[in-house]
Image (cartoon, rainbow, N blue to C red; front, side):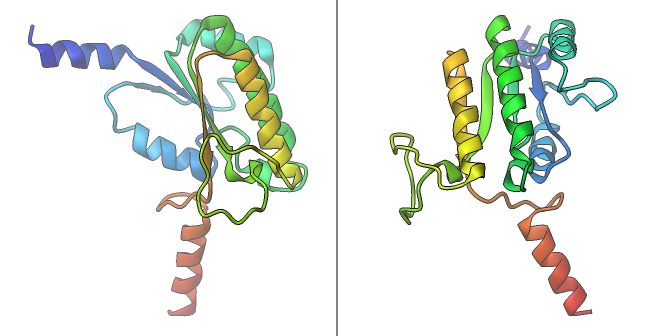
Length: 180
């Protein structure tokens, strides 16, 4: 067997669980990941009740993902009262990934930082959230960091993509309507 074929066979057996394909961030990730040569797991609401720890455990046991990418609750956290989904998802996924030694990539937000008007931040910068949203993202990060050794937390600012409902697509739609 050629080295390329063996590499492809290993890649094809790799399973990546993406927790959200509804939000703009989830749609953008799905669009990019679905073209890759691995098994992309994207359970529908009918396949998995994300709020039920037993159902999540059953799904993970059945499908055995090699990596989880969590963006569940990211969009909702920016809306009044929407932080609960972010927090519960982070806690449930940290628990399941910890029990199975599955690495977790978790999307967080720049809103964990204070309003110091810094142009860029580094992972060494301290966090000092100024809003309910920032507090929720900081708490989710803490839960994940405490429960998982194998985790990456990525703090994003605005999400802009050509797919889904996001700042760019809303601006383009408004421009299109105004100039017809």
